[in-house]
Image (cartoon, rainbow, N blue to C red; front, side, top):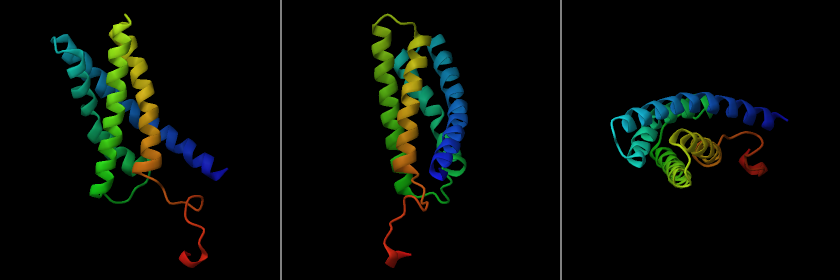
Length: 140
């Protein structure tokens, strides 16, 4: 029960941070495409715009990680690289199916957010709780 509440709270916080990052992403994307940047290049730049804020907010507020270390940053960038790749591939695929950029970008963003949440929760910022610590009595 407690584990579900923690995941639910993390999910809500992740959604709030993600909303802020998505707003930056969408604004940059539409700004860049309005000045005739190629939509895939605009996607990479716009997505990257929210990554720094995402790291700081999610590390501290969403997943309560106390200190910054190189391994964590590397994992974070890997998860975001995978999420960006998912979003870009879906954006490319949806636009080639004839979807407008707004719909394609929206659905690609939602799917990439799910990938990003679970990558961050399980790999980048795994929280040590009584539910996921080793049960070895010697280490207690």
